[in-house]
Image 1 (cartoon, rainbow, N blue to C red):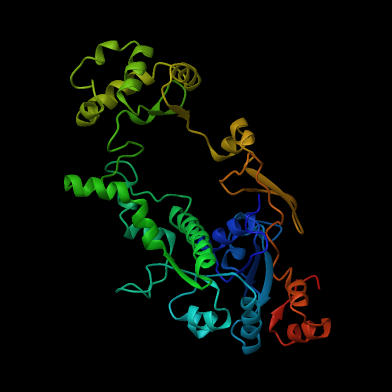
Image 2 (cartoon, rainbow, N blue to C red):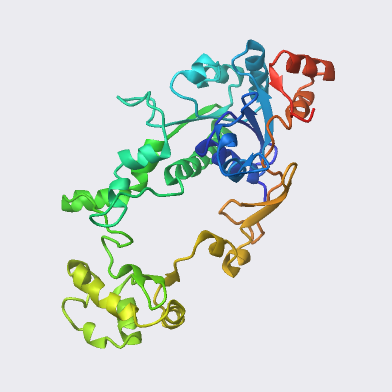
Length: 399
């Protein structure tokens, strides 16, 4: 199912949030043209780790796109981008404050070029307010939003979420905004300006913890893998490793106690209900910890799963990726990269009509499709190479 087939996206964004949104749009069938600076391209092309000069981070969020290298600082380069936008449906950009206007790719300028354009702008803190000109970085918004203050062991060092949830969440919210805007444009036949920011995403990701604070007057605290509203609901040591246990309600607690021969705790007022267990959090965790050290992780998984108590091994990523359940979901997509050969990516986490996810293009090398796209615009081969000689466009190094 490719519902966006026939739509064109001009992706002027870089790093993670915008590129992820563009990748999702590409997976849904849109023709995504990633416009990149000549020479260095997207910042993440230089990030480590790399294989044969190809950045893993860039590969992760840029498949299903074509790369066009254009110097937006030149008048001729801006003219080319305006011509692309004139026949496009969607523009994505995440420049710093004032940069889009300076490069003449801001909303007001491009709306005149294309009155039906859907324009998505990504920023760090939004464009208004005292921090409206501050650049946005995932870890800074983790810190600013209070997220980092809640992560790590009690009394220990702070920890950051390792996978850039603010960037990736912003890319996902951006996709939702673009899809909603497509419906709105279908209704009004007019352009739509969409704003997403890392700040808005980070605060929204803290929403139920914020509600906890408004309810209790107490700021969330570091709890390791523990949960402020459920207990026992955290990682425990086993005889030979570790296990994540998630007793999410009182019925599961009763099943857990029956499975581990601690039925006397079911009627103990300190542990009979989840509210009581949260009130007596340390006592609950201490008792469960003693029990969990009596068996191996594998033994616990077999026992607890058989009686309907949520649990999971604490996998490393390499083990998770090859698990039969991930394979059953047909989540990993495969393409042929021009440098690396066969590669795989994580596909869009939405499945349509039971069909497997698929990627039609690998992440492109810089400027891989410049000539192809300019040819589609009607430029002759001589014009394209003249622009390349002038440094207005960039062609792949192999040409």
